[in-house]
Image 1 (cartoon, rainbow, N blue to C red):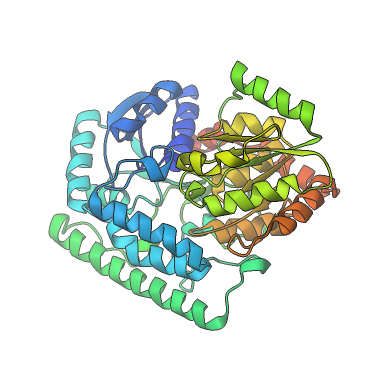
Image 2: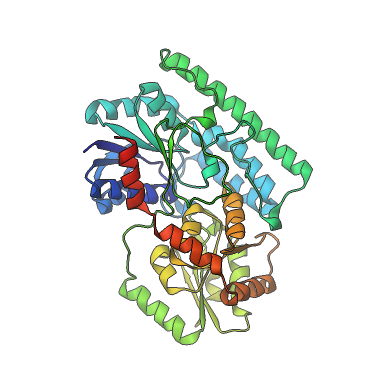
Length: 439
């Protein structure tokens, strides 16, 4: 069986699913090395694979972005991004576009040198690299290494058409569809980035690997062998590139984890006091929006039915502690995958992990997208009929209460369809297909 190096950026929402794929590859017989920053060594241990220290970006998020130690410039960009989410969808996306080079391509030379050393030492048969780790993908291209790509979010991150632009949603949910002028501003920012990154790639290749072919378009650079999408095969998704094999994993939920005794007790107490339990989690970045978390909790408490709520508040626990009570549990973090088997409805931000985990667990969701690919994922939740999308910046408690009531009571035949589709796949399905594609 092959020796495989799985390269992950130091972001919890990327590293966890990649470590689960690494575990599945190892279970199928591969010798797997999980390459990430030291803070994520524990993921390799839990996956039962080797750990290889490797840092592919200066940014980091070890579980709660707000409390992760960042360098000065990275910290300033993070705070600017948080502020932009309050201004709305397009301002958040434009801010991300302006930050893209510093966030994704801070030191490609260092990454190339580090990966060259890993390659010389381990001699892997092939790699798996996060599609959004552009410096790592560029390094593998320069090394002439064989690799598969892993797309951690919406499949439209893998560009296939000339009119697709990185950072512009392929479609928008009805509640957040922008006006023409702001959309033009976003398109211009994305097109400028597309050109700038392509020039950057060309210059880097000419300098560091002159015998390697140039890339036609930086953001379209991906594996020529296989792309694993941590997503279900929805029929309306944008066309995938023709060359690599497309493997739709459905989800990246690992082996079923049970709640520990403390969490089982907490859930049991809430069940005694309520007929409906709602889980609220806005991912590893957006718990900073405690204003939205507060609105959601107030909405849950205004529902006609007796409802309880579990809130993942990150570093904002103190800001929300006044809401804590018999039907409100405020925690810094939650065991989301395990909890989904014990709740009735979820409120999330449209992250790829949350969307697919809800599908896998058959839990409907109120989706509140803020940035990145969350608008595209929210649109898919809307089209599949498994979620309702609202604008987090205009949300009021009454809207939360009515939307959650609809989600909790409406018949959702599409949920059964898409849950069955998602459950039929998963990390072991993806690992098997990937090993065949890379054989």
